[in-house]
Amino acid sequence: HYIKQSTSFFIAGEKQKLNQCLLNILKNCIEAMPKGGDLYFTLVPDHKHIQLYIKDTGVGMDSEQVKRLGSPFYSTKEKGTGLGMMVVFSVVQAMNGKIDIISEKGIGTTFLLTFPLIQKT
Image (cartoon, rainbow, N blue to C red; front, side, top):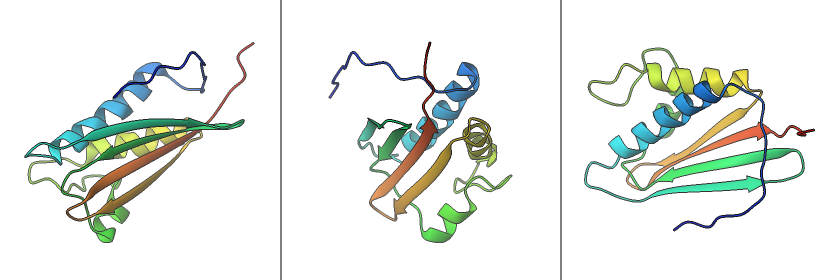
């Protein structure tokens, strides 16, 4: 379901790196739903930040797995390198952002990316 709003929001960072960050998250979400599922995107702006929620209905992770995400070479996948999520964490940090991950086994995972808004002049 798609709702278009005409308001634009701006964050500081390199477009290509942010694209790679989002691609890595989306790839993980899709791979976490081997039998299909739903993938949701929600943007929530306020006066100083914008929050991007990316939620899947995949296999989910336990709290120990969530804690280790972003560590070099840690992966929940049999053939994963762990480098994709390491890139995600490093890009978000470089953009003065924050990443939170909420997950429950058998229910799915939500990635919450928060970035400071910049004023476009």
